[in-house]
Amino acid sequence: MLDIPLSSRYQTEMKKELFIDGVPELLLLRLLAQNEMYGYELVAKIHSISDGAFRFGEGCIYPILHRLVGDRCLSIRKETVSGRPRRYYRLTAKGNKRLSQLEESWSKVSAGINKFGKDSIHATA
Amino acid sequence: MQQRKFLARARKALIKHGIIGSRAKALLEEWNDHLQSEVEKLVAGGQDRESSYQDACKALGEPESLVDSAAKQLAMESWQGRNPVLSSGILSLVVFILGILVMVAGGSLLKAYFDYLSPEMIKHLVTLIDTLPWLLCLGWLAYHARKMPLGWKGLWFVTVFTAIIPSFLGFTCDSPNRTMTVFMAFLPIGSISKFIITFGLTLFFWWFQTRGKKLEDESHLVS
Image (cartoon, rainbow over all chains, first blue to last red):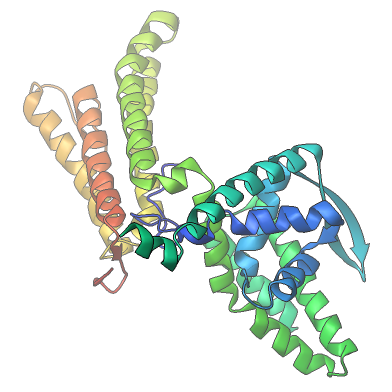
């Protein structure tokens, strides 16, 4: 708690690519709205559906999933597969609400960005 | 074997980042499942098991990078992680005030509520109370000694410095009839100054590190 921020964990400026902020969460919730899935399946689906446009590292996807479980947006079901534990994630009612909120935010952002088409910029110039 | 080595390195890196307990266990289980699933997919595609493991580990990346990425993600999700300077500063201030409070009030409360104890016993307990914040502070400093320019030698220097100087100050302020030890000061002023000096030095290293620079064991700074 009183830790001097660990050098690779914390930075003086928490730089985030604003464009990509919230996208992993949105994609995960969208996929889980359709089916119950486990981590590997989710990572592979994101990669394949987006045609390789999104390839979120396994280092960031699992903490996001665990956080969503902690926030009760997802529920887990544990199963033993080939002798190892596997967690299946499923969207909860709260997760559904969260998904709706994210989709609404994303629609606004997307619509706003689309208004900055080249034609509209030249027209207003 | 490769899988065990991978997970062992990941476990070590998690501990180094301060990610322990159920959080670390959950991540390791997920990465293990991820690794094995990738291997099964490659083996199902006709590849041999040995090279499948190699490719799966390569696809997942170095365990240290994986953990680094996870640590950054976890940090971004906490208020403390998003505001490292402010959170560390506030917590440091709270600890400092609590430490002073314990030292000043501890002895008085002891004398007020435990007057059935012998004066000798009270004196020892007061010394213990006055010394505890300093010891805790040294523990905090020891945790960061690995990032100090002189490493553990730096910690030894700080320990000796903070033990001797306040005792010396206490001796010079006190009457010549009372005996003073070199290691610990019995006077509250000695203990408080010891705590303040240790705390101040630790805060200096905290400030230096939160400027974005790392203090390496090789005594050179890396941004």
